[in-house]
Length: 491
Length: 99
Image (cartoon, rainbow over all chains, first blue to last red; front, side, top):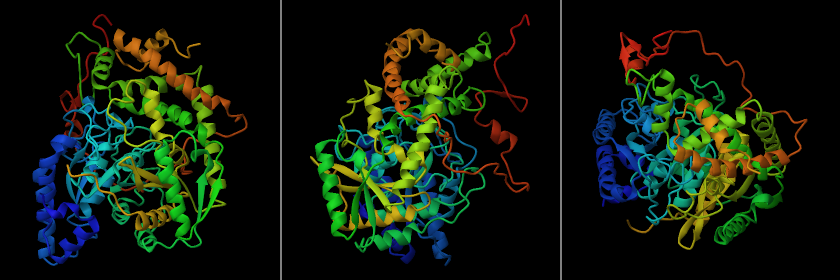
């Protein structure tokens, strides 16, 4: 095993720029690691060996020619399989898209390529990003590098496991209700959900368009910020992209690393500080809050009375949007077609294709969404959920008049064993209890490793106001400077 | 009382173009009932005079610059189709023979 795989992205980029190591060596070290451990972790759905080496060689050639390299040039990265990658299989972990090779790149992917970063492959996830354990992948689950009998979180379990298991220093995830942050928490990695509209959704296979947000995954806060800076910023191809400058998250991460939080006001979400979480998670959370106080932060309790309705509101809004978005999988323009025998009608072929191509959780959500949007139930379900969304947003804006950031545990429980929550879908939904309010509001939030409970990682969630992504990076870096980083046992 | 019946699930599946099996209906009916009973809690919130939020970004009528930019070629657009003919997407028959 090469020592290169243990380095941070920032260190790797520095060594490549200085000529201490070639981008090709770095890429090959990670491809070797994937070959060695991914049979057990199953973080990847597709590994692009030749494409990765080719991209790395291009960076080495640029450097040899004396061209200036970007801050992450030559650094390998894993991409969640919900992001369109030109010519590279993209399935969203669904059978309905098996074998699909997109004819274009997502904006996030274009920016990664333009930065000279090296894509290693596509990571496993819950089908169409619906789930909290990666067990709903149509291609088999991913296993948590901390304990291979446990889940790596979801939906972005593959990205988090790849980074935690040293298969990649960086990864891209997407966060609709916690799919970057919850996997980060249970794998001891850092995961950030940028402000909605801060990163482009163009080329992201849509699940819930008013919530979906691509974001960075890494092992350190600085690496997370460096990747955030590469992918963020206005994109004319996404009509909900915010036309404002990207907050300087890298400077904020460097500032926070000094460990001084004097003058920073931190709000403890009262409703998320007690019941519902495992005692071990709450113990780590309380210790971390105390650490923040020691760093100079002023900590106060803040009540957000409508947060308790975020989970039910989300599980109406997201399925409603998904039932509409997934209508595009109609067996006509891409993906699977089943039953086209010359006798079945178009409608029959659509129904047979969708039945064969979608997994149970996707079907459940399409049906729930169709129900919530139907004329007789619209006001009571979808309409009411949208009003609750307004009240949750008001809770946030009122909280941010009193404090700079809000904190909570990222998820109520540490990594659970595979199969523990699949029989009762609602038990799975509870994994997102603390992460969902931010998605409904649209602000940024980050999960940073805070400690261990019975040998398993626990994350601290830091939530900030819209377009104040830099704030959460400052606090996260300060937490990291005092609690350190956490490495899983050798695989 | 159940929030949703097996028959309603079957009807919704038809509307959603999902040819679900009898076994799936048995499984989904109970699961969806648990989910709907749980999410129905949004009804506890007094929100009659609260405006709905559909989206967190208050941007409307976003238009791009009126300039020509490269798009997908016809072959690229057809590259992922399960079936195509004469540079078009080919679909199963829409009208029955007698129509």
